[in-house]
Length: 111
Image 1: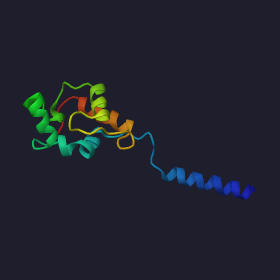
Image 2: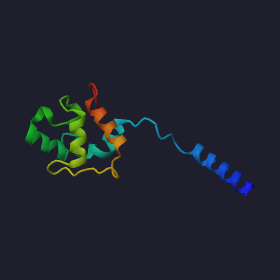
Image 3: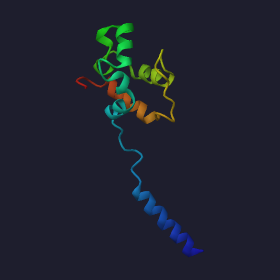
Image 4: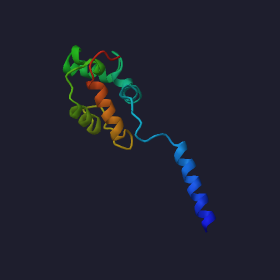
């Protein structure tokens, strides 16, 4: 029994050391690139086109906007807006969503 407990403890230590740190910082720019850039990353993207039609050319590209609040970004991403689908926590974690909101509200310049 002692041998089994020692082996289990040793294995869990090895597995734990091989796993990445949970608290590692998530890059909001990478989240934007992965989840948002297809629709919102270029002038031709469908999200950019929709924003141009509804909000104006100066608010079309998300990465160039300075008027968005983190709470608004988080709400729209979680609940969707018009043709934009919602991103549920199993698709986009809360940590990634916060990193994304931080990226989109950080001082310019952004890509």
